[in-house]
Amino acid sequence: MSTEENKAKQLIIFEEIINKGNLALVDELVDPEYVYHGPMGMEFKGPEGLKQLCIMFSKIFPDDMHTTIDDIFAVGDKTVVRYTGRGTHKGEFMGIAPTGKQTAVMGILIVRWVNGKEAEAWELVDLAGLMQQLGAIPPMGQGGK
Image (cartoon, rainbow, N blue to C red; front, side, top):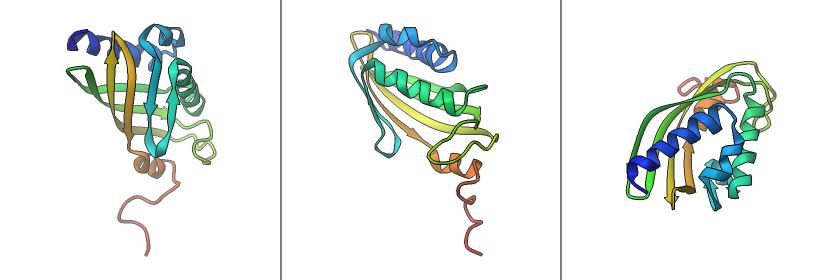
């Protein structure tokens, strides 16, 4: 697959699967041997693993979760996406009860493609920023005194 085809499929994954919750497309776009490497050692495997990850976040941000792609580029068999995810916190997240707060978090996703399917992904997310928005940790420079 060309880098442009990989980018086009990456856009479909963000818009259709992540934003619209169309999990039926996962089997079509994700390799059976898929591995997701997320923050804090989080790992999901196979198309079912990606579906579980999407469902988990749709429960945390059930009403208005939306991810905007800020940058996307491709080199060889990899795509890289810098994104901003937004949503209202209405489900438990990492032991934090729902706050009703609107959040915006930045992340970077690197995806390796094999035969036109997403085969492996590495994601870095600004969890500290999200935790600050949820009130779980103080903003930088405001702790201690």
